[in-house]
Image (cartoon, rainbow, N blue to C red; front, side):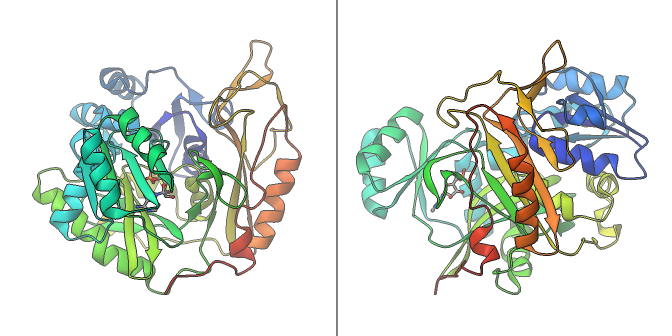
Length: 415
Ligand code: AMP
């Protein structure tokens, strides 16, 4: 099978490693890719959000399967354009990707499907925003209604800051605060059949102890030793299948990766958000543990044959990834610094590029993801942090507590 992978971040490097390791893949092409992906794939240039350009590349490269990594191309209709050329594509239509592209649409679908989530109001003016904030009380949760690369959400006790964020965004969803540990559950689906991957947890705040501003994600681990038994079955029954059924009913069947972000509250799991693609950096750990060949699984979802796919097999143990971020991330990441020590298995490239002389340079806020598996979380942490220690990047920073509470049995469930 010839596979074309669209994107060039850490998630796509993790996808590339999984696809390249699948014996059914004889040629892997990535566009635009990155220097890490270049080790396992042929790189091509493309504007990932240009539907016609990606569709033309799929035809030109004779792809049997196109895998779309990031959300922006999905929302822009890239999957529709590829499908229109008769090429199998892993990734939902633009209409179905609105589940991620519009928080209001996601709330409408959840309400129609009876999915447990935070109560919410969509607001477009300061008075309505103020009323919504006072309705729910602190802590305040204010979300940009559109795509914001994981950075459009402000959670704060400061009413003025909440109002400011609402004014800056224009159209916002203001919702009830959900208290409890968070879970990311990835579900591979062809629109009807749905296969959950291992639940993972990511770390959104920039600083140790969940301090500082939200980021795209500073690290992740899987599986979750503290997860209640039956969690995945419950989420499949109460969230995933009702949501997929509602999307079919609405005429927007969702085929691809449904990312369910949950809080495990005293009243049970509640949806925080849906995404229409693999999460970054949780993908790095989930795919490191997946033994089932990845391309076959994604191809089954892309061709409506997932019901006939064999059950997934997982490697024993645990996975941990630690993001190495550039100086100034998330507010004002500095790029263009030389990186040393990145040339080792387990180092996933998230924001890198090659200089003309071949030197590896930082090219984004999240630069590398040090990823390791081990017999348990403690062992995986040790290896992941040893990888971090081997990286040299001026001014870089990382969290020191990724998976620490879980490894020490200190994650508690409310209620
Ligand atoms: P989102 O982009 O919707 O995932 O939000 C980013 C982060 O903000 C989430 O991972 C949570 O940590 C936090 N968050 C979002 N919505 C809520 C909520 N209703 N209650 C508590 N925390 C939230």
